[in-house]
Image (cartoon, rainbow, N blue to C red; front, top):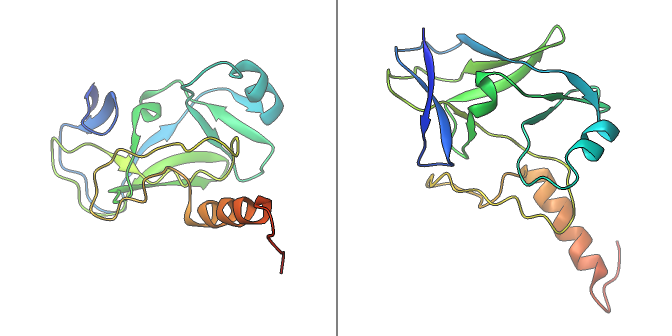
Length: 153
């Protein structure tokens, strides 16, 4: 299977497959140097765009530099990202047609509390943000508790 980068209707550039991919196929590894969260924060403190992928350990990220870094987010994805034996793989969640853009749900879970990380996937079920459902709830609780007269449960 061949992958290529071209313009995307989701966000700037996207990753497309040139051949059909069967559900369950390990498509591409998310590669790049592994750096600490502190290094990532320092390196990208003034950057709008990053290609960071949070690892399960919670202390390191991959600073993406391969073709997988161009796979966009979608609230209705055809792929998922999974950490397997220390490697991050993009895996087909369903059969994917030749020419289709690859996308997975980023499920962001951290960031500045004022950062909305807007989603432009245009899916019918779009949440409007790259953040996970859990992070959306956490932010809503935080916002509500910060309002005058708010009480905590």
